[in-house]
Length: 366
Ligand code: C2O
Image (cartoon, rainbow, N blue to C red; front, side, top):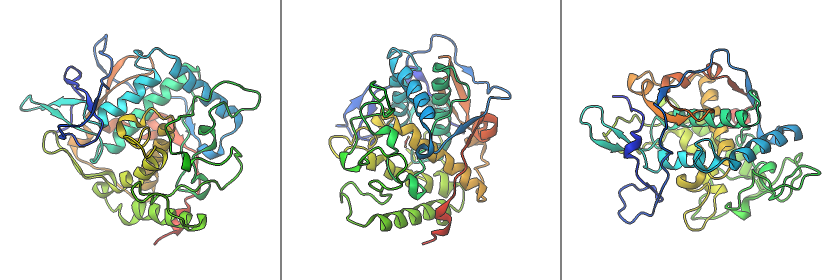
């Protein structure tokens, strides 16, 4: 049976440690605002204006300005506005840390679920970014606005993109705070300076392990290891939908802990960027990840891997239970809507595509 969209009246606090049954888990309030009107099926606009999502390390100043303006406008909305940055960030917490519940279609029982560790990982995050991007575009009145993606699968993208780093605007002549900045990041992993043209800066380590700390490998070795890691998760281990996208999950059957290779590939950017203290805020914990603007840039690349995997011959699930599963969101006008997995499978229909870049990892078969 497909996953219905969450029963908002049953939403509870989310757990901070993502172990749902831990009785001592710290909890946090992440439920969305109560809809003021009926939740309607979302209608994808016909002939949408094209949005081209650029690689974050390749954007120019004009783009950075636009992007900063959009995120700044989102952050300026009142917290109770479902389109505010605050509410957008909480979407992740509620869906990923067991705040939401769905009514079991047969028994009527309220069942807790998460969109991680199962086949909802890619479609949920795709819809999440889709609305986030439309809200951002709406706030700056630009229907072509597209989110950037953190191209960590290519050597020049293997560092935290420069525009996210400084506390104050990186643009010449501006003195405003940088809305892309987040204080809760691992200081050891931030680029050393802001030179956008440099293809070298604290190389991201896809094999980073929080417990073990940073390895002392030379950059070139890290880059090669990263490329091999991408290859493994995009090709060797990604042989079918279940292996790439995650285990099948049916409402109430189990809690679904079977991450696909695309999710395993995506995890290191979270632990690498987040702090090593407390609950690894922001990026290192699902409850807080959405509060770092880089989250949406990281997930742009995750979403892009889905596209790349298909172009390499990957086939999506054909299961009706997956296709008909639903999620709840607020759209760019603040209207409550529900969407289906089957409606997000065609990016062209959704109106966006990714700037084409090379795939150096295709040559990095371990
Ligand atoms: Cu829902 Cu990268 O996480």
